[in-house]
Length: 89
Image 1 (spheres, helix red, strand yellow):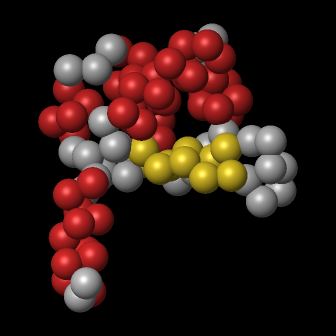
Image 2: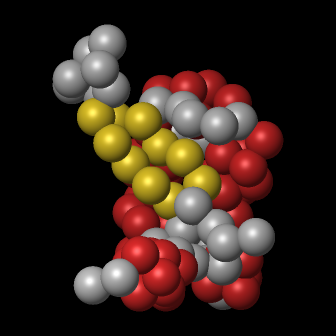
């Protein structure tokens, strides 16, 4: 696989704002908060949006299903995950 094929495959797996349009308002709010903050934990998102943790978790799952966010384990605390927006420009 060439580098351009890998880039094209990566770009295809990314979501767009069109994918977010039909999601619930909580998912849209979480996406907007992640747009302005590079990486956040679930608790930081809940604090910023004033949404309950369960609603934030649901929104993050919906955004992950649409491939518009990237999640990874936190190096400082492996129990937590860090979320960032992964929408093509």
